[in-house]
Length: 135
Image (cartoon, rainbow, N blue to C red):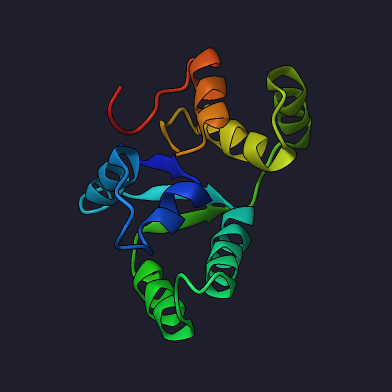
């Protein structure tokens, strides 16, 4: 079953010293399935790479290589957010609009969400949205 992926999960894959069960499960699921992300995912992933370059955690060449590998994965960008639903979720669950965009997408498509963000995961659970990874 396709799933919604957020930037925290995706960025985790760039670092060999990070191992998160949710990120590992999402990466494994992409072997036989696809993921979908709101358009802001593209920017958030790249921002995470730049921030980590500045922290000297990753080099420019590693960022380029990671983004090239990422481009080969079956991640579809959704460009049809429902503004009113995003704002409602942000208000109701005390989320940023960015996080509410992932939640709205998962709810609209009826697909599970892969996130490392605890607050977003809790909001998904409260909205009866399944999560990728261990319980």
